Length: 277
Ligand SMILES: NC(=O)C1=CN([C@@H]2O[C@H](COP(=O)(O)OP(=O)(O)OC[C@H]3O[C@@H](n4cnc5c(N)ncnc54)[C@H](O)[C@@H]3O)[C@@H](O)[C@H]2O)[C@@H](O)CC1
Ligand SMILES: Nc1ncnc2c1ncn2[C@@H]1O[C@H](COP(=O)(O)OP(=O)(O)O)[C@@H](O)[C@H]1O
Ligand SMILES: [Mg+2]
Image (cartoon, rainbow, N blue to C red):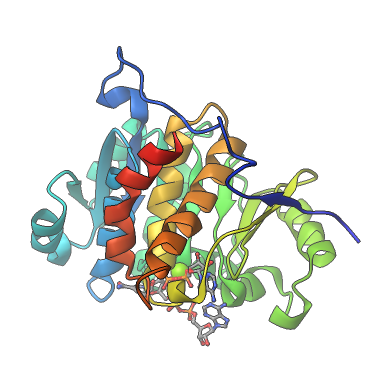
């Protein structure tokens, strides 16, 4: 038996980041979200707008150009680049302080090329959140992740594909052993999501509800995580805060709404984050 620390509202009391008077947009990170092919444009919109609404200072979305108009009309704060233009992507990777890759990226050869380029070019000190299609591409192509600040956010099937551990066997001892082997942080998403650090701390999020079982919930988590990491003193604190905030906001909505629509979750974040601070 190994222990998980229960993370609830009380546990995080006093740990929420506050905005400083002498700050500016550059104080709260430049988040680069690489997401959304022509089929899954919504994933890119949800991830990038979640980063904006959670307090990220600057947010750039690298996506399929067919999504540009939709992004502009839903979240004007998001800047855009074409994810297939490696000159633009390379420049964006130079200025990013945190990167998300994978929501709705798809499994095409072009998606794999983008993933490989990012893994090669990303600055080793920049946290990299790896989600959705990027997890599947890594599993399918047996890519070894050497990035020192990689954070995987799999759902149970993605974790099965990445780790080889069947969903029914995804228990803390087995999960921790695989996380140690991967040497990357893993946020294993389900009811009461678990956070595993290699050779380190493990946490269980005491929040969340079945209203979140709808497409796009996980895409939103990546943007919230990126913004909270950007605003927190440490990577591990930002991960805990972001993962809890996602489920906590969902719980407020679920009190009165039977499904937690991902875009509505995003809209509630600024108010609830202010209350927590
Ligand atoms: N609006 C959009 O553009 C959306 C895009 N999405 C993107 O679509 C791509 C494919 O992701 P999916 O997760 O749909 O596809 P996956 O194929 O990765 O996962 C779905 C499969 O896993 C199984 N499964 C077992 N346990 C599960 C669990 N706990 N949670 C989820 N699935 C479980 C399902 O039965 C199904 O067969 C990702 O890149 C994702 O980011 C999704 O987020 C949905 C919304
Ligand atoms: N029954 C549930 N109870 C609590 N949380 C859930 C439940 N079902 C899904 N979630 C949450 O919703 C999110 C789903 O992520 P994911 O499957 O990646 O969604 P998508 O890829 O469609 O955006 C995760 O944060 C997960 O913890
Ligand atoms: Mg997902």
